[in-house]
Image (spheres, rainbow, N blue to C red):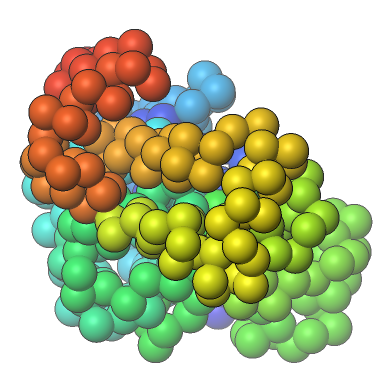
Amino acid sequence: MPQTVGLLLVPGFALMSYASVVEPLRAANLLAGKELYRWVHVTPGPETVAASCGATVPCVAADEAGHLDFLFVCAGGNPAAFRDRATLAWLRHLAAQGVRIGGVSGGPVILAKAGIMDGYHMTVHWGHAPAVAEAFPNILLTRSIYIADRNRLTCAGGIAPLDMMHALIAEEHGPDLARRVSDWFMHTDIRPAQSAQRASLTERYGVHDDRLAAALELMESHPGEPLTRSETSRRVGLSTRQLDRLFAEKMGASYAGHYRRLRLERARDLLRQSAVPITEIALGCGFSSASHFGRAYREAFGVTPASERRSRRS
Protein backbone atom coordinates (compact mmCIF):
# COMPACT_ATOMS: atom_id res chain seq x y z
CA MET A 1 0.00 0.00 0.00
CA PRO A 2 1.26 3.52 -0.71
CA GLN A 3 2.22 5.62 2.27
CA THR A 4 0.13 8.70 2.99
CA VAL A 5 2.15 11.79 3.82
CA GLY A 6 0.46 14.78 5.40
CA LEU A 7 1.83 18.24 4.73
CA LEU A 8 0.71 20.74 7.36
CA LEU A 9 1.15 24.12 5.71
CA VAL A 10 1.36 27.06 8.09
CA PRO A 11 0.49 30.43 6.46
CA GLY A 12 3.68 32.05 5.23
CA PHE A 13 5.41 28.69 4.76
CA ALA A 14 8.61 28.60 2.73
CA LEU A 15 7.74 27.43 -0.78
CA MET A 16 11.23 26.14 -1.61
CA SER A 17 11.32 23.97 1.52
CA TYR A 18 7.83 22.60 0.82
CA ALA A 19 8.65 21.81 -2.81
CA SER A 20 11.86 20.06 -1.77
CA VAL A 21 9.72 17.69 0.32
CA VAL A 22 6.80 16.96 -2.01
CA GLU A 23 8.54 16.88 -5.39
CA PRO A 24 10.80 13.90 -4.51
CA LEU A 25 7.63 11.98 -3.52
CA ARG A 26 6.08 12.72 -6.91
CA ALA A 27 9.28 11.74 -8.72
CA ALA A 28 9.53 8.50 -6.75
CA ASN A 29 6.05 7.52 -7.94
CA LEU A 30 6.88 8.44 -11.51
CA LEU A 31 10.21 6.61 -11.64
CA ALA A 32 8.96 3.55 -9.79
CA GLY A 33 6.01 3.27 -12.17
CA LYS A 34 3.55 2.89 -9.30
CA GLU A 35 2.12 4.87 -6.42
CA LEU A 36 4.55 4.61 -3.53
CA TYR A 37 3.37 7.81 -1.87
CA ARG A 38 0.22 9.85 -1.77
CA TRP A 39 -0.04 13.16 0.04
CA VAL A 40 -2.64 15.45 1.53
CA HIS A 41 -2.32 19.14 2.34
CA VAL A 42 -3.58 20.09 5.76
CA THR A 43 -4.32 23.55 7.11
CA PRO A 44 -4.51 24.99 10.61
CA GLY A 45 -6.99 27.58 9.41
CA PRO A 46 -8.11 28.80 5.96
CA GLU A 47 -8.93 26.33 3.18
CA THR A 48 -6.28 27.92 0.96
CA VAL A 49 -2.88 28.61 2.48
CA ALA A 50 -0.47 31.16 1.01
CA ALA A 51 3.28 30.70 1.01
CA SER A 52 5.65 33.53 1.85
CA CYS A 53 5.93 34.34 -1.87
CA GLY A 54 2.14 34.50 -2.34
CA ALA A 55 1.64 31.12 -4.05
CA THR A 56 -1.44 29.32 -2.69
CA VAL A 57 -2.20 25.67 -1.99
CA PRO A 58 -5.71 24.27 -1.33
CA CYS A 59 -5.87 22.26 1.91
CA VAL A 60 -8.24 20.24 4.07
CA ALA A 61 -8.83 20.54 7.79
CA ALA A 62 -6.94 18.24 10.15
CA ASP A 63 -10.04 16.15 10.93
CA GLU A 64 -10.46 15.46 7.20
CA ALA A 65 -6.89 14.30 6.60
CA GLY A 66 -7.62 10.63 7.33
CA HIS A 67 -4.96 8.08 8.18
CA LEU A 68 -1.40 9.39 7.95
CA ASP A 69 1.82 7.40 7.92
CA PHE A 70 3.92 10.54 8.09
CA LEU A 71 3.33 14.23 8.73
CA PHE A 72 5.62 17.12 7.78
CA VAL A 73 5.02 20.57 9.25
CA CYS A 74 6.16 23.25 6.79
CA ALA A 75 6.52 26.77 8.18
CA GLY A 76 8.51 29.92 7.62
CA GLY A 77 8.48 33.52 8.77
CA ASN A 78 8.00 33.64 12.53
CA PRO A 79 6.91 30.16 13.68
CA ALA A 80 7.36 31.14 17.33
CA ALA A 81 4.18 33.23 16.96
CA PHE A 82 2.09 30.16 16.03
CA ARG A 83 -0.50 29.59 18.77
CA ASP A 84 -3.28 27.51 17.23
CA ARG A 85 -4.23 25.27 20.17
CA ALA A 86 -6.27 22.83 18.08
CA THR A 87 -3.35 22.18 15.73
CA LEU A 88 -0.87 21.75 18.57
CA ALA A 89 -3.27 19.29 20.24
CA TRP A 90 -3.63 17.41 16.93
CA LEU A 91 0.16 17.09 16.68
CA ARG A 92 0.27 15.67 20.20
CA HIS A 93 -2.50 13.23 19.26
CA LEU A 94 -0.57 12.03 16.19
CA ALA A 95 2.58 11.65 18.27
CA ALA A 96 0.70 9.54 20.82
CA GLN A 97 -0.52 7.32 17.97
CA GLY A 98 3.06 6.72 16.87
CA VAL A 99 2.81 8.62 13.58
CA ARG A 100 6.22 9.61 12.27
CA ILE A 101 6.37 13.41 12.41
CA GLY A 102 8.76 15.82 10.76
CA GLY A 103 9.33 19.55 10.59
CA VAL A 104 10.92 21.62 7.83
CA SER A 105 12.41 25.14 7.99
CA GLY A 106 10.37 26.74 10.80
CA GLY A 107 8.29 23.57 11.23
CA PRO A 108 10.49 22.12 14.00
CA VAL A 109 9.69 25.19 16.11
CA ILE A 110 5.99 24.29 15.96
CA LEU A 111 6.78 20.69 16.91
CA ALA A 112 8.65 22.05 19.91
CA LYS A 113 5.71 24.30 20.83
CA ALA A 114 3.46 21.22 20.71
CA GLY A 115 5.69 19.62 23.34
CA ILE A 116 6.61 16.57 21.26
CA MET A 117 10.36 17.22 20.91
CA ASP A 118 11.52 17.12 24.53
CA GLY A 119 14.43 14.72 24.82
CA TYR A 120 14.81 14.44 21.04
CA HIS A 121 17.68 15.63 18.90
CA MET A 122 16.36 18.33 16.60
CA THR A 123 17.60 20.76 14.00
CA VAL A 124 16.06 23.95 12.69
CA HIS A 125 17.03 26.73 10.30
CA TRP A 126 20.01 28.63 11.72
CA GLY A 127 17.95 31.82 11.82
CA HIS A 128 15.55 30.25 14.34
CA ALA A 129 18.18 28.39 16.38
CA PRO A 130 18.94 31.07 19.03
CA ALA A 131 15.25 31.49 19.89
CA VAL A 132 14.72 27.72 20.05
CA ALA A 133 17.70 27.25 22.34
CA GLU A 134 16.38 29.92 24.71
CA ALA A 135 12.75 28.77 24.73
CA PHE A 136 13.16 24.97 24.77
CA PRO A 137 16.12 23.93 26.95
CA ASN A 138 14.98 20.28 27.03
CA ILE A 139 15.49 19.87 23.29
CA LEU A 140 18.86 18.58 22.06
CA LEU A 141 19.51 21.14 19.34
CA THR A 142 22.00 20.38 16.57
CA ARG A 143 23.32 22.41 13.62
CA SER A 144 22.84 19.63 11.05
CA ILE A 145 20.89 20.13 7.82
CA TYR A 146 18.54 17.35 8.92
CA ILE A 147 18.38 14.76 11.67
CA ALA A 148 16.33 11.63 12.36
CA ASP A 149 15.79 10.66 15.98
CA ARG A 150 13.44 7.70 16.43
CA ASN A 151 10.08 8.79 14.96
CA ARG A 152 11.00 12.46 14.56
CA LEU A 153 12.64 13.92 11.46
CA THR A 154 13.57 17.59 11.39
CA CYS A 155 15.20 19.62 8.65
CA ALA A 156 16.69 23.10 8.43
CA GLY A 157 14.79 23.95 5.22
CA GLY A 158 15.86 25.60 2.00
CA ILE A 159 17.08 22.84 -0.33
CA ALA A 160 18.14 20.60 2.57
CA PRO A 161 14.88 18.58 2.28
CA LEU A 162 16.24 17.20 -1.00
CA ASP A 163 19.02 15.53 1.00
CA MET A 164 16.59 14.42 3.68
CA MET A 165 14.12 12.93 1.18
CA HIS A 166 16.97 11.08 -0.57
CA ALA A 167 17.72 9.38 2.75
CA LEU A 168 14.03 8.71 3.45
CA ILE A 169 13.36 7.17 0.03
CA ALA A 170 16.54 5.09 0.27
CA GLU A 171 15.43 3.81 3.68
CA GLU A 172 12.00 2.76 2.44
CA HIS A 173 12.57 1.78 -1.21
CA GLY A 174 16.31 1.29 -1.62
CA PRO A 175 19.29 3.42 -2.66
CA ASP A 176 18.80 2.82 -6.40
CA LEU A 177 15.43 4.57 -6.51
CA ALA A 178 16.70 7.33 -4.22
CA ARG A 179 19.63 7.91 -6.58
CA ARG A 180 17.33 8.07 -9.60
CA VAL A 181 15.08 10.58 -7.85
CA SER A 182 18.06 12.79 -6.98
CA ASP A 183 19.36 12.55 -10.54
CA TRP A 184 15.90 13.56 -11.79
CA PHE A 185 16.35 16.89 -10.02
CA MET A 186 20.04 17.13 -10.97
CA HIS A 187 20.78 16.87 -7.27
CA THR A 188 24.03 15.01 -7.75
CA ASP A 189 25.86 16.12 -4.61
CA ILE A 190 24.00 14.33 -1.81
CA ARG A 191 24.95 15.79 1.55
CA PRO A 192 25.04 13.72 4.75
CA ALA A 193 22.76 14.73 7.61
CA GLN A 194 25.54 16.32 9.67
CA SER A 195 26.56 18.78 6.93
CA ALA A 196 26.84 22.43 7.96
CA GLN A 197 23.87 24.73 7.41
CA ARG A 198 25.95 27.79 6.60
CA ALA A 199 29.03 28.58 4.59
CA SER A 200 32.31 28.51 6.48
CA LEU A 201 33.55 31.60 8.26
CA THR A 202 36.17 31.99 5.55
CA GLU A 203 33.46 32.13 2.88
CA ARG A 204 31.05 34.30 4.87
CA TYR A 205 33.60 36.92 5.85
CA GLY A 206 36.03 36.51 2.98
CA VAL A 207 38.96 35.99 5.35
CA HIS A 208 41.80 33.58 4.69
CA ASP A 209 43.84 33.98 7.84
CA ASP A 210 43.32 30.89 10.00
CA ARG A 211 43.95 32.80 13.20
CA LEU A 212 41.36 35.44 12.38
CA ALA A 213 38.85 32.74 11.42
CA ALA A 214 39.50 31.02 14.76
CA ALA A 215 38.92 34.31 16.58
CA LEU A 216 35.63 34.88 14.74
CA GLU A 217 34.48 31.37 15.60
CA LEU A 218 35.25 31.96 19.28
CA MET A 219 33.29 35.20 19.22
CA GLU A 220 30.24 33.61 17.57
CA SER A 221 30.23 30.79 20.12
CA HIS A 222 30.42 33.12 23.16
CA PRO A 223 27.67 35.74 22.75
CA GLY A 224 26.42 35.68 26.35
CA GLU A 225 29.78 35.95 28.09
CA PRO A 226 31.96 37.91 25.65
CA LEU A 227 35.62 37.01 25.62
CA THR A 228 38.13 39.79 26.21
CA ARG A 229 40.65 40.74 23.54
CA SER A 230 43.44 39.27 25.63
CA GLU A 231 41.61 35.95 26.12
CA THR A 232 40.80 35.62 22.43
CA SER A 233 44.36 36.58 21.48
CA ARG A 234 45.76 33.96 23.83
CA ARG A 235 43.50 31.23 22.48
CA VAL A 236 44.40 31.85 18.84
CA GLY A 237 48.09 32.44 19.42
CA LEU A 238 48.31 36.17 18.70
CA SER A 239 49.23 39.27 20.62
CA THR A 240 46.43 41.79 21.20
CA ARG A 241 48.24 44.19 18.85
CA GLN A 242 48.28 41.56 16.08
CA LEU A 243 44.60 40.77 16.68
CA ASP A 244 43.67 44.46 16.48
CA ARG A 245 45.60 44.82 13.24
CA LEU A 246 43.90 41.80 11.66
CA PHE A 247 40.44 43.14 12.52
CA ALA A 248 41.26 46.59 11.21
CA GLU A 249 42.75 45.27 7.95
CA LYS A 250 40.42 42.35 7.19
CA MET A 251 37.13 43.23 8.90
CA GLY A 252 37.15 47.03 8.71
CA ALA A 253 36.14 47.21 12.37
CA SER A 254 37.64 46.90 15.80
CA TYR A 255 37.48 43.68 17.80
CA ALA A 256 35.00 45.24 20.23
CA GLY A 257 32.92 46.80 17.46
CA HIS A 258 32.56 43.55 15.54
CA TYR A 259 31.78 41.58 18.70
CA ARG A 260 29.12 44.11 19.68
CA ARG A 261 27.49 43.82 16.26
CA LEU A 262 27.41 40.02 16.50
CA ARG A 263 25.71 40.16 19.89
CA LEU A 264 23.19 42.75 18.72
CA GLU A 265 22.28 40.67 15.67
CA ARG A 266 21.70 37.65 17.91
CA ALA A 267 19.52 39.82 20.15
CA ARG A 268 17.51 40.97 17.13
CA ASP A 269 16.83 37.36 16.15
CA LEU A 270 15.60 36.63 19.68
CA LEU A 271 13.37 39.71 19.72
CA ARG A 272 11.81 38.74 16.42
CA GLN A 273 11.41 35.03 16.98
CA SER A 274 10.82 34.48 20.68
CA ALA A 275 8.85 35.74 23.66
CA VAL A 276 11.93 35.86 25.91
CA PRO A 277 11.76 39.04 28.07
CA ILE A 278 13.92 41.89 26.84
CA THR A 279 15.96 41.99 30.05
CA GLU A 280 16.82 38.30 29.66
CA ILE A 281 17.81 38.86 26.04
CA ALA A 282 20.05 41.74 27.09
CA LEU A 283 21.86 39.66 29.70
CA GLY A 284 21.99 36.60 27.45
CA CYS A 285 23.71 38.63 24.75
CA GLY A 286 26.37 40.02 27.02
CA PHE A 287 24.95 43.42 28.00
CA SER A 288 25.16 44.58 31.59
CA SER A 289 21.59 45.90 31.79
CA ALA A 290 18.43 46.43 29.76
CA SER A 291 19.16 50.17 29.51
CA HIS A 292 22.69 49.54 28.20
CA PHE A 293 21.24 47.08 25.69
CA GLY A 294 18.52 49.53 24.64
CA ARG A 295 20.99 52.32 23.89
CA ALA A 296 23.27 50.02 21.90
CA TYR A 297 20.36 48.52 19.98
CA ARG A 298 18.92 51.89 19.01
CA GLU A 299 22.34 53.14 17.93
CA ALA A 300 22.82 50.07 15.71
CA PHE A 301 19.33 49.61 14.22
CA GLY A 302 17.53 52.92 14.71
CA VAL A 303 14.72 51.47 16.87
CA THR A 304 14.39 50.35 20.47
CA PRO A 305 14.18 46.64 21.35
CA ALA A 306 10.54 47.09 22.39
CA SER A 307 9.69 48.76 19.06
CA GLU A 308 11.45 45.94 17.19
CA ARG A 309 9.31 43.35 18.95
CA ARG A 310 6.06 45.29 18.45
CA SER A 311 6.70 45.81 14.73
CA ARG A 312 7.50 42.13 14.23
CA ARG A 313 4.31 41.05 15.98
CA SER A 314 2.18 43.48 13.95
